[in-house]
Length: 295
Ligand code: G1P
Image (tube, rainbow, N blue to C red):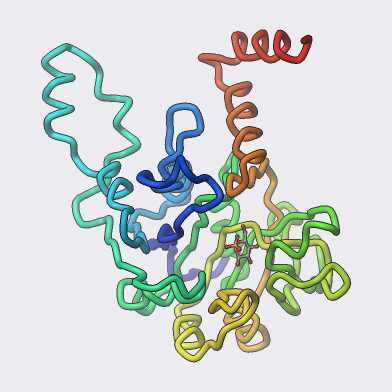
């Protein structure tokens, strides 16, 4: 294994308005919607920390303050709980070392590529991770940890991919795969091309980008000049496509489960699936689901 610059920083684009979940998301950021007792953003942050990433960069916008509050020290709450002899362990995942959470604002909704570019000064000159919190990835180890292991082998740029039915490719970024099935866990695929939201006919495969990235800082320079792409937005996929050939570019097939919490059915699926896995509730939830399905 050669030594690579470690991945210490992660960017979380969380400026989106969450219109698909209105009215729930009128006053609450969609990233704060809970899957059982943890907001979506918490799952993404947990996954980052498990992968050894401790510097969190949130690209936020108006009305998103609750996300930052969630990871802040809540003095009154903690004092009250301590006064009542309640354990503070439950708050542990929300504790971030002072200085390790930075926010930048995306002032206009110009697309994912633009959101990432807004973090360029904080990212600086080192490789970094990106998490799209809508994509809930559950695995042991987590998706980013699997990607960091692959990164330690091949370096360069990595994206997580998974297969979807052909009629779904037009909702995602799609890869043109080269050599497949090598590296740690035989999970690596060479990326020869990338297309954002292609038609079913134009899609080079059914392998889609599933919301986790490890990118070299040069992508920021490419984004600087990136024109509008699919949906009239500045697309991260288009900027990444331009880096293929000049830097290693690989896809990692994640060994684990993925839930698309950007849509309502995916959100319900995630809630049920995680409840059925959790030791503290699975028996009761299973019995409840059986009862409901029997009607
Ligand atoms: C974004 C990316 C796309 C990726 C998807 C994963 O699309 O642009 O390449 O496949 O996330 O969820 P969005 O969901 O923002 O339209």
